[in-house]
Length: 194
Length: 194
DNA sequence: ATTTTATATTAGACCAGTCGTCTATAAAAA
DNA sequence: TTTTTATAGACGACTGGTCTAATATAAAAT
Image (cartoon, rainbow over all chains, first blue to last red; front, side):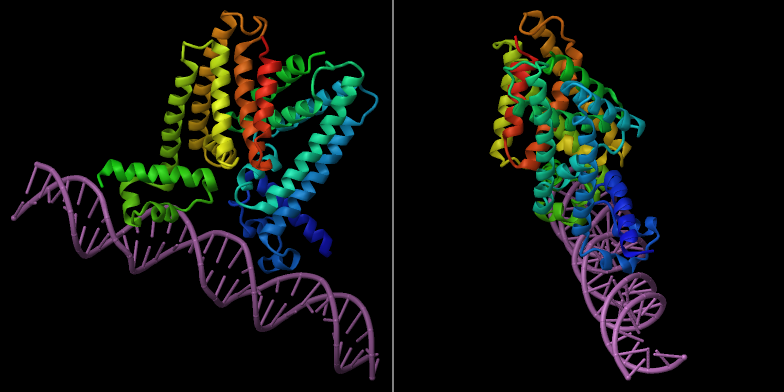
């Protein structure tokens, strides 16, 4: 197995464990064992557990950004429809996972924001990038008259992201897709109603 | 120190640590040390770390319910004003804590929902009780015409709670009160606008 | 082709920290 | 005095992340 292959495998397994158990409760050993990589090898591939986690975060963010762009930049649909489709797709995805895990980055944010400044800063950056994509889309929606011109799209984008993260949190706690459905209906039928 | 005094002190310190570091990353020992109680005493008062955490949760929920009721049942104000005042007060509280920690129960929910069913069930119950209080208040707001009769107050209450939790999560990540302000302005000027 | 050098990879020790148990002791109440 | 309540902290068994020393593989040089 080449170096990159092994490293990528570790990142993938790590992401799974981080989503399921959080950072503090995930052990290096179990990740190694699950990947089939011997214990001693970890520090050949990564400088520390912290760096490992940080790389996982970066990796996950990249992947997600692609999904986001796939939806929000699809010019065959109207801006607001694109946003709705994106969240609808996410709803299905999370529901199909039995409402567990939720958003890796949201989870890590809540777990580590007060504990590790490197994580906090990286996550802040990533969320800001998501927010920017929402803003872009909402601005276009406003331009074509899909949402009221009186609304401040920056605030709206902010609110949208925050509320979505909150819905995911409650989805986990209630083990039910209802919070996501609630998000969809209020966000699109009340907040962003045409 | 009487039994209740010591036990209460442990619960109080425990709550502080749980808020700051989460469940998995908080050690019994540090709680004991910070409270000035020897190790041997812990297992006299609590059966296990899990039970300790569960009691902290219950305790915190009780306290919070009282605050909630203080605001939402204050009949000198209109229903919607009561709700707004409640969240405004919470905003100030969190901001004055340098935007750290956030909501203990929300944090624990995200950390433990997939890991410990006892915690999840207890938290689910508590959140449901909060939701019921919101529903009550929103129903009254609807009765006096403060919000549109077309809105489903159950869904609205749900959304309100979820979005608030999301705002708290992002407050932590960004170390800024902006997410809370965003919540206030969108929730009360757009979603619940008279 | 064989030896030397450099790089890639791993094994296992290490120590600090975890929760929970245990026995012994002190304080208070009956 | 006897019994209950509470304190005291050592101890065990285990897991955590990390590091050094050793091995395996590849590249270069003789």
